[in-house]
Length: 284
View 1 (tube, one colour):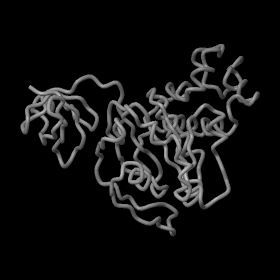
View 2 (cartoon, helix red, strand yellow; view 1 turned 45 degrees about the horizontal axis):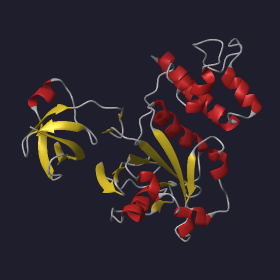
View 3 (cartoon, rainbow, N blue to C red; view 1 turned 90 degrees about the vertical axis):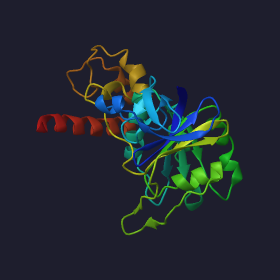
View 4 (cartoon, rainbow, N blue to C red; view 1 turned 90 degrees about the horizontal axis):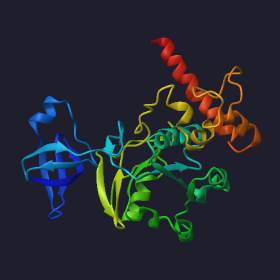
């Protein structure tokens, strides 16, 4: 029995890179996994027989429902400053899901050559690693390749922001890209399968675009999902504090919003997510 890592899933088959010879073997999921309704995903460490079957999935340190990936170290959140228009709500949607799984997010803002606007200080002030890139300025990429060393990273971001172009640029690959559909102000989906690429002594995973991250948080998850909310919530008077009701006295999150330690824009995005989850629970 071999051990290895799933690097691609294609139409019910799994490409597994062996720990022994580092070769790729195409296999299927074993019958026991199907009986237990366990589905292997990219990033899984597995026990398998060469050119035969996967028999066991080893423990996962984290996993995402969509994209279906496991055992990642960091998420590269790619957003454009323009075309499509920048959305802090969408950025925070990605960040809150990623941070809830204790995965480190890194923000890459594209199309800096098309605008004088900047968001780098806004997010750096909240403790994030941020890059604003311009393909006409190599200096804007300084330090970006180094973040991938010895890490398994995945890219997430609205379609049309240049996510695939960025992967091609960094890894010297040649994935297909398409122009943004101007009439819809969004890109056309071009990535057809999740795959893992070795890069800079680490690995990067390419994932589908706009709808590729599942908002799988519950009402109870949300108040401590953002890392800066999690840190502040330790000092809230009530352990079940949701950080929005007037009856929740001595809420440290609201106190930090008032003082500017937590951005008002982030807090409003949080309330937007909370309202959505409350409405969904009422609809049930």
